[in-house]
Image 1 (cartoon, rainbow, N blue to C red):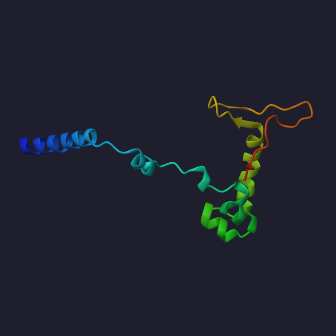
Image 2 (image 1 turned 120 degrees about the vertical axis):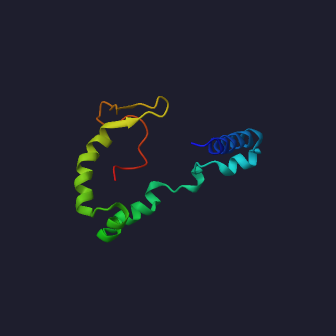
Image 3 (image 1 turned 180 degrees about the vertical axis):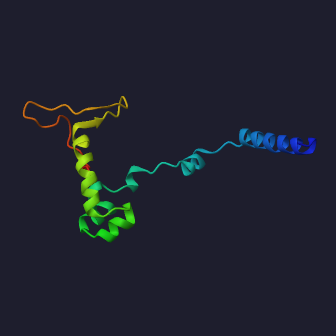
Length: 117
């Protein structure tokens, strides 16, 4: 590698680092650059476009969205649904654990907002 090329890369990289350190975003600019989707912009699962499309029973729509038709989706669901119903995600610890059940056999805690579909 020539000395000129090495010098060019060094200058290119060092300029970027200096610019990043000197640029301070205002709180409003940081909020705009945040890549998370606010909860208010999300629909409940029961009102979601996927739930509506899946409920229509149209194979072509599901093929375009997921790459499988309803028969294959139901076959995959038969494997996933027991696992979904048996385990839960703990928000506080980040663990996946077995859902505890009451004496009547119902799962403890609040009812889930989504189903295995």
